[in-house]
Length: 299
Image (cartoon, rainbow, N blue to C red; front, side, top):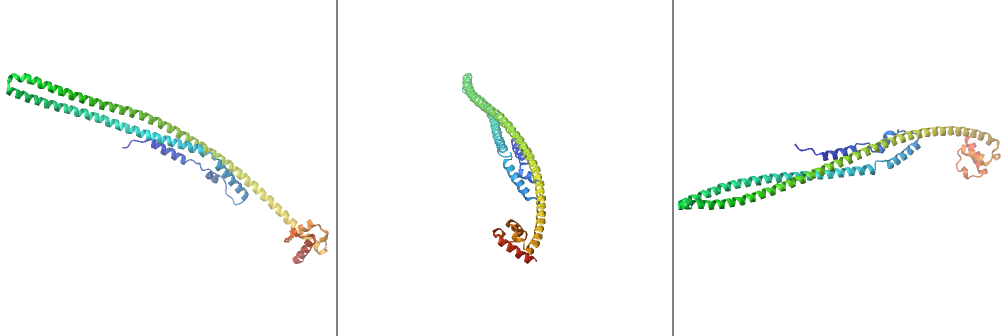
């Protein structure tokens, strides 16, 4: 079973948590603002305010920068952890190699001892066969040579074993240092990730609050628009009543020949009531003639 990787867990969960935050201000506004076909001016105003809020929303550089720093710290911590693991593996291999060297040297020494003993016995036997009086002297010489060779081999084996142990110890110390450094970087990455998460939550709450305020403002603007529409309808009704009054005056004044007695402004008002084209550029006499023609046509 593979060992859990805390840095991978931290990086994956941090980026996933940030992506799941409701940071899209436009989405919040679209959910908060009611849709209606009335009061087009109010909708345009709400859209403009929504765009301004999206431009000023606090979900920009501060959170993104914090997240970048958190991800960079997590990557550095991951790299430190990998280096520590590699150093630990090298230390383990060095220790195993030192053990193998020591075991190989012990085996070689034992084999050498057996070989030297065999050679001593062989030389002794030969010496006995040659001359009994030289046995002790030959034994001593052979033993001295064997002891010297054995001492040399033991010295070399001890030096090689000591060097392997020193190398293994150095690797272990380096591995410990890298593990400590990786732990520090991991703690720093976690701290930066927590700060980024807190900043993102605060930004999301602020965006939600502003969206609620905009929704209330849009609702008030829609109410104001409804009031203006109602006022416009009242103005239209008054205009229709004025048009009816003007038409009545037209039916009364034109047959009686009283148009010349009216002022030009009053004639323009009558021309507008019966929708005479080009009335604004006509003279008073032209207005009188046009109104009379329109009156005859109407009758």
